[in-house]
Length: 224
Image (cartoon, rainbow, N blue to C red; front, side, top):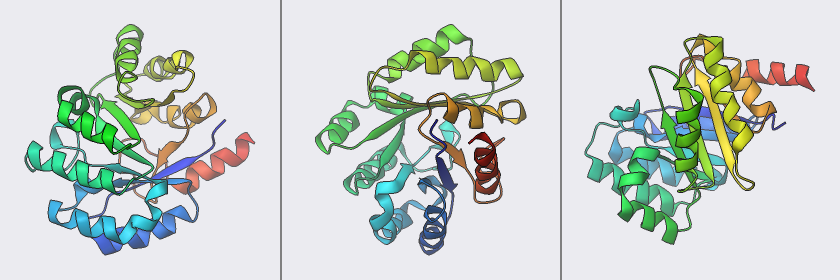
């Protein structure tokens, strides 16, 4: 049982991000910095402000095509991802579709010894178990750390995603759960069966079905 949390922070201001990060890390094991919510020109400023805490941060620069906010060119996004890698965060979250097709980025991250979190999201549904397992196996080829998040339309969809924990490689780390109301409990259950942490908010949910830090802390107390 991990019983660990990662607070998602989605701020447009570098100063506000630093302030909230200090607050978050006082009570949470990790924080996810959604840098795609920020203007690209502000990202270097933000990185400098929070660099002392990046060892406990998962940095994400999600494009609009993957459900994020980054709307610049892909070339610009890749250059920012490389910049983030230079700050050596706990994990750099890069989408499976991005890492699969961008050999230059793969090689850069390998040279810089960046700890990579390869992620994949389905914002409409939850595929069946067989394609999900195949997806996980393909993703583990690029990193020992992967994240698979789907959208649950039924309780059964959560069970499909959680079944992935049965087949994690010996040295692999899997974060897998389902979004939406039907997937809410998978955000808790995943930490009990292998996920190193679960994503939470400081208040208002950043993603569908996300619990707040306070809610999860209360639930974890009951599971002890």
